[in-house]
Length: 118
Image (cartoon, rainbow, N blue to C red):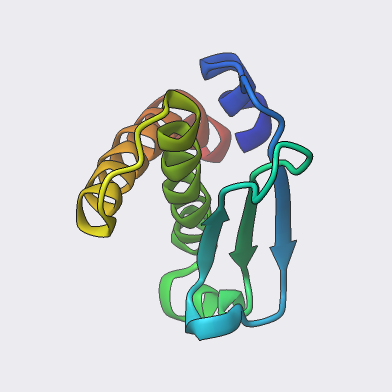
């Protein structure tokens, strides 16, 4: 559902490798975007769903799934920064990714997610 929504919203100008894992990520983060280190590599997005069971108990299915999708949307924000050629300092980069996350998730909720749960 989210994949189809993303593909209908924009094209991905550079292939990106996405990995969703039950493992904890290095530094305790729940999502990471990695720029390629050479022209022979692709950018990568990692999302950990290690905490999904806790979210499910605390928030219920609807919000637990949205929480995971928000993490993914945040990392897509970093990907879009990368493909646009803009990568500022860490603080401004996080603000941009946060704003993108908010707008993308709200659009997804309005156009797809609420419809699915009705």
